[in-house]
Image 1 (cartoon, helix red, strand yellow):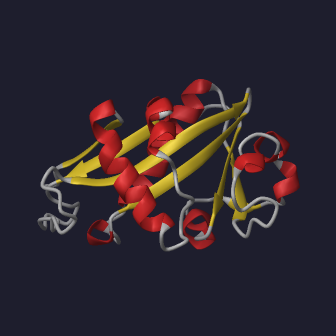
Image 2: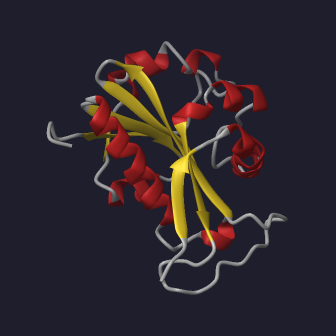
Length: 172
């Protein structure tokens, strides 16, 4: 029996989200997110809490936290038919349990409910998203993203992230 909760992020989650996202940003696996941006976009994010994983084993709490916070993932709306999976992060102690995939699936469900036709991501870990059905695309196929967020990114124009996209079924 697992004790996994995935829910929309609340203001009280922002400190944990910031710590986790920037933990991976220091390792150049994610882009850093300022605290102010996370507060402004808190409604874009889902968070995952767990005491026991799907295998029934207790999840270690080695992150300096005892609240069970294990992961975060955001769905950013770019246009009327385009959204981005962003800032997917799961603490190392929670890895290899399917939590990242669960968070992405939650975002994809919300995208489908909103009528989004295409979801993309920019990532340094393309194999993870490819296992979920995403396919590599040229960044130039994402003009709303490039002329929106990318212009403000410290990596622009030398971004080395891989762009992937997933077409959603109309019945999703």
